[in-house]
Image 1 (cartoon, rainbow over the protein chains, first blue to last red):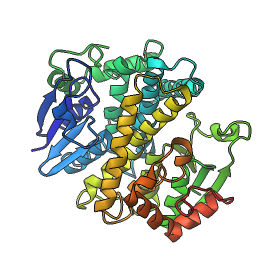
Image 2 (image 1 turned 120 degrees about the horizontal axis):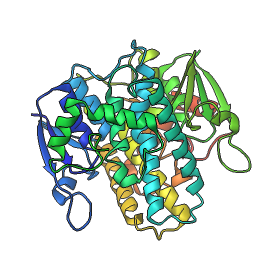
Image 3 (image 1 turned 90 degrees about the horizontal axis):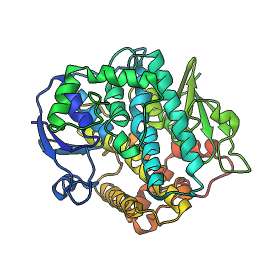
Image 4 (image 1 turned 135 degrees about the vertical axis):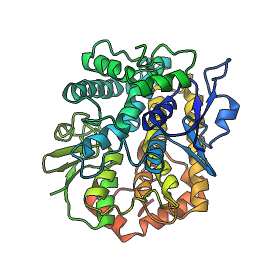
Length: 214
Length: 214
């Protein structure tokens, strides 16, 4: 049985949402963060050598890394749904947002978090600020021209991006107040039954920045 | 004609190597970094709203983001080569290393670059160091059990992963002297004719830390 190991209030919520959108059978194991510091508990860190979320197990397989997990689940259990193929007009756009969400945007957000924690006077602050500005501008523009990051339909690009625009804001400190297209998108996602089911399961006590509460 | 816009001494070298491994027709446009600061020149930044490398153009399409570009090229021009499918025993491993290379490892290296530039008094310095230590440990272990990151054969996981232990060392350092499996891997890659052709085209003046010159 495919098992999603979800660290509370973390990017592993993406995988719970993915499974709900695909309507597949899966087991959810939720791990609360430590109470002394907001980090993963030891039993979560022991799941995978990197000690990060998300992690899935499937028989003998232990797999980390959000993008890899999305690809794996869609291919093995989802009949390739939420994943446009090379003949789909949205193929390139989907690929861009799917990969960019963590590799570039996520990296930028985490650098901002680093600077907030003690980066006064860092000579790279301007570099990070420029990257952030470009990223948010691109996001707002994209959501003005398309319903979803992947284009006409929900894809794993959205599965990846929503966290950064909602729950992840608690870590990065980002605001979406200046971005009407982003706000409308987050509301649209929050209205999806699969997203609501996922958040109810992943965060049973509620989290203030999911798409249902943003 | 597929055009690879390569920023000198940057991660866009991956795409040049990919095209050489696939043996496809492509045009290479090389852009030297600025001379005042080691950043992309204005005409490179103008290619894509994010202003970063790599970028490809293909007819009307402008596509950024290393992972997206790899998938696009393999699917559209490569007959799906270098990309194990769901029935391949190396599927999950390939997916992990392919995504992890930028989304987790690359992000951690950028965080360290940020911290090095702004002093190590940041309270997150220990967190970042720990993440990088785990990463190199995992890499060394992987290359002790498999010839390639993707498993038995070269895949886009290797296309992505070669960068940090070679050219990426110039930006973020890499302790490969302490890791015999990584050193051997870098030598194996450096001996590949396609890699040598790619580096000769991408860095015609030679760069001290490609796999051919370590």
